[in-house]
Image (cartoon, rainbow, N blue to C red; front, side):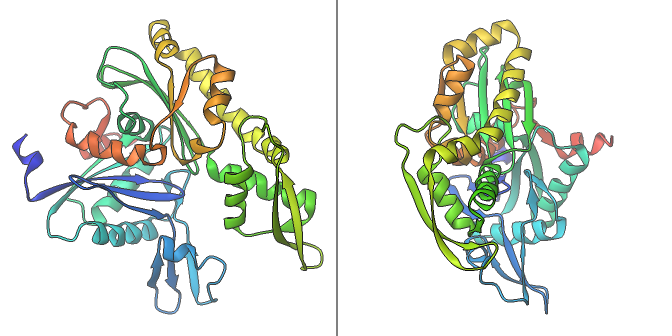
Length: 346
């Protein structure tokens, strides 16, 4: 136990999200929150920008600059780019020669091969010790749920590319499921709709702003319009378009129904005694996608269970990975070390 708090060792938790990477450092909290994007100069293969700086280059980058999005559905799609990006971010987050002990959240559906890819990327980025925890379990810890107690707790983490759901009790996971749907799918649904309905395309920033200002998981009381300038698909000319809140509500209904179906399936599989706890204490929503207007209201109406949004939903996973590191000896059922990951080859 003494070595766990050694001044030569720094505990670091990472939310390796499809949209955003967040880094938690023991004693300092969340020190970094950057888009999961990296830009390289193809002439010399050098890093040009990472995170926010790379994001600003999406629409303006010259032909010699390549934009990389190495994480898909919470899993590494491009190992080399992810390793490089992690190394860069860790060098900014920890300015010392301390030994790094790192915990990363991974989706429930991650295969053992995918888990090993995450662990190897962490080691290549400079870790001396590496651990994994399911994203939903980390979110529950970060949201302050009583996961150690003999009562049932349920969390729904709506991330950028994946939604993770878990029921926890007595320091372990009772049921966990994940689906490759998240806030990026809400954006894509809006993007496809304005392309088909209005024959225009626009940038990612406008789509995100449209979702924030006019998006809703429940029927909006005020059907206000959102006006933006897009480029016509047929003629390439700029034109102004107005999209009503009721349109966005209908468009986002399809991915939301799929998430709801999975949540209902998890509740049906939950043991009756834990279901009673969830009915009494409710479900907690975490993740950036959970901030969509009316999300808690939609889940509560459809599930017949109290639902609350975590105070800092987008930070819950990163905070939870840090807390899991500090209590990893008590959370043996939740935390996976290298020995366990590499022992399971199939």
